[in-house]
Structure formats: C-alpha cells, structure tokens
Amino acid sequence: MHPTSVLTIVLVACATVSAQLNQLAVAAGFKYFGTAVDNPGLNNQAYMNIASNKNEFGQVTPANGQKWDSTERAQGQFSYVNGDAVTNRARQASQILRCHTLVWHSQLPSWVNNINGRDAMTRVLQAHIQNVAGHYKGQCYAWDVVNEALEDSGTYRNSPMYRALGKDFIPLAFQAAAAADPDAKLYYNDYNIENPGAKYNEALNIVRSIKAAGARVDGVGLQAHFIVGQTPSLTNLKTVLTGFAALVDEVAYTELDIRHPRLPASDADRQQQSRDYQTVAQACLDTPKCIGITVWDFADQVRPFPSRRAGSES
Image (cartoon, rainbow, N blue to C red; front, top):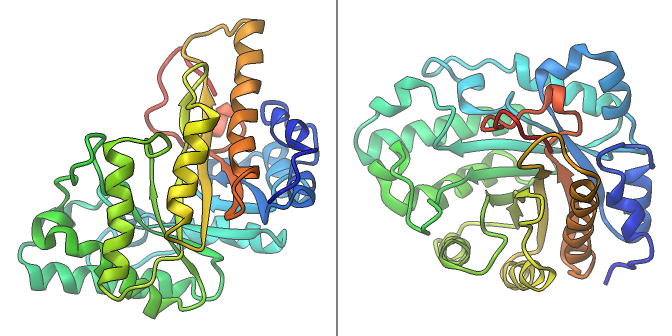
C-alpha cells in the first residue's frame, strides 16, 4: 500500500503547480504524476517550462495528436506530425508517455462512418492500429486502446465500430494493439465509471470479455472528470478501483479535472476543490494497483477538454 503522509501536498497544489508534484507522488509510491499536453500549448514557453519539468510531471499524455482524425484523416494516409510534436518533447524531458487513443467513437474522420460490414471494419481497425501503435512502438508506457465504448446508461455507443462488429470490436482492437506494440500496457479508458453503477458494471464486463477472447488487457483508466462538490465519495472511489484491480494488473486516473460549476469561484469553492482532489488522491493511494494520476492539463488557457462550458473552470 502507498504511504499517505504526502497526500495533501501531492494534489492540493494542482491549481497552482507550485509543489514538485511528480517527485512527491513517486516518493508516495506512485509510478508517476502526469499531465495531458495538447499541441497549442507547445508554443507557450511559460506553459512548457512547467509541462516539461519532470519534477512536476513525470508523465505526459498527448491530448489530441494521436487520435484517429489526426493520424489517418484519409484512409491509408497516415500523419504523425501532431502526435510526434508532443511525444518528442516528452522524450526530451525523459517523461513517461501514455499514448491516447487508438479506437474512439469521437474525433473520427468521416470516411470511417462509411465503412460497412464486418470484414471491412476489421481490416480498417487492424490497419489503423498496426500503423499508429507500430509508429510509436517502444515509446509508450501504455496505450488507451479503446476509449469510451459505453454510454452513461451502460449500453454500448452506436459507433461505426459497434455497428459493424458489435462488442467484438473491443477484443479485436486489443489483439491488434498487442501485436503492434507488445511491450506497452494496454488500457480500457472511460469516464463516469468512478462510482458503482450500470456503467461501472459493464466496464467490468468489457475487461472480462477481452480476456475471454484471449486478448491481453493490462489496465483500466478512469478519466475522472468531476465537478467541485460532486466528486464521488472516498468509499465509492475505492470500491470501484478495487473492483477493476481484481481483474487487471493496474489502474490509474487518466484525465483528472475537477471543475467549478460557476465563476467566480468563492474561497469556499476553492477549499472544496482541494478537498475533492485530496479524496481522489487518497483513493489511489489506498489502492495498491493504482499506479498514478494524470491531470487533464493544468492551465485553463490551453486545456484540451472539448466540452468545457462557458462560465466554468477546473
């Protein structure tokens, strides 16, 4: 079990980024404390001075540059300009790289929606994963192989992949990823699975189905997009982490942000936000297989969260 003596220091500083977050997290037993980095932030030197400081962030996730609409906008024509721009900076700073994401219903190029039939979609998925994961082979500590396959109700999203292949697209993707990058940890990643409920239960079933198909799944990523004052309880967070940890080698918070629902935030709101971050950190600290926390960027000016609402902040 991770020591908890540095809990308060590790995450309370998220808003100000004044403590040496990764150093403290590693001392507490984590593998890393990391951040997402999106391409627009690369041009902001003050921002990059922090993002590339390994003492602050020992891990980086490219927020958008490795997604399908960035890597294969036209079928069979691959580009890694955006992904490489972020991964190269992370490599120069000796930061751990979490790669994100191979299969997602959103940010798909339009041509994928026109792929019909099981065989055709299988070829498309395998070719995409082989090329993208193959390009980054040996660079990624982990891949978010499949992202957000479920609706909040726990039913499957009506994505082009699901329409063509049903639930089978998920183990197929994991098999392809394992072949393309054998040393990377392979994750299923989703949001609103941090509380017990229908979506959490179906996410457990996804992990079981991947393994039943003979594919490898190493971890579950819990995105953890929360609202101040509405963060799940410590008990619920730990229950969910423990449930996933019973099935996989590791779990992680992969896109943590806790936004204020209104601005300006009061002092009481900011104190509550600190308590919420502490709750999330405590849950991870108390779960032996929880290896780290990634914040979904740390500066509102460059944050990659697409559904950020006017009049709110993280």
